[in-house]
Image (cartoon, rainbow, N blue to C red; front, side):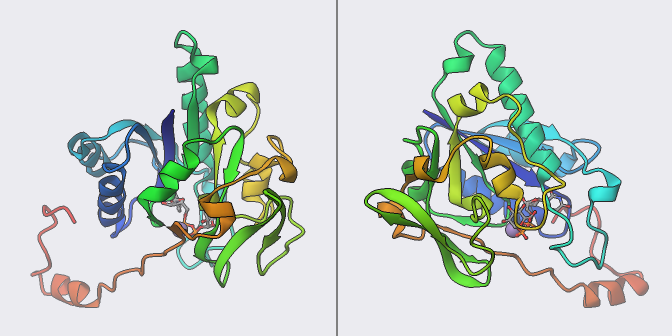
Length: 256
Ligand code: UGA
Ligand code: MN
């Protein structure tokens, strides 16, 4: 089965670096279709060009986050969920595109929501490829912990190892699960709820799709960390600004 990877992304200084790293990981994964959804009112030349040159099978979409839902400069990042409208747009495209193809409804496929800043081992894609409904595995460096993970007993997920509100329906990071295409096609209304309270975004999708005892543990019964919730530092531009003030800043024609 093909793995459809949905990635929300937005313009910032590190965007090209993030997407370069991600695309070069994906080049090593067979049968991967990358669905990149820009948080922007239009497709940008930077992302367009990167995708054209990437060598990947991809679909390029865009969907701006509604103004009242978008984080403003200086807001703490937990204030509003990120990437929601973009992931939903990816799901909308995928459903519509499958319906337009003969046998598309029953096509084998796996959907994974891969943020542009995380670190993905190649192994995590092979683990998720056999997803029947929803598969799960640990995520490293997340939630103020070394890792969060589903706890597996007798081959079933019985609870979650997490430091915060373990009573949430699915207390897992976005990077810690994949969903089968068939399940998403069979539940045409399932999507992310941008109004979900902090920490409940993942649950808002999964609640409509599975129960805890149906989760399929991967990565050796959830004993291995194969994906990391890394976050890229915002680069400092102090020197750049000083030079710009003197009229000798870096050439704006050079894409970074
Ligand atoms: C954590 C989770 O790992 C995310 O999956 C979840 O969406 C997020 O919390 C949340 O609560 O909303 P975190 O590292 O804090 O992630 O979020 P980011 O990596 O900053 O953003 C998640 C994705 O949305 C990224 O792919 C990013 O490029 C994209 N994004 C972010 C946008 O498309 N627009 C924005 O304004 C900000
Ligand atoms: Mn992130």
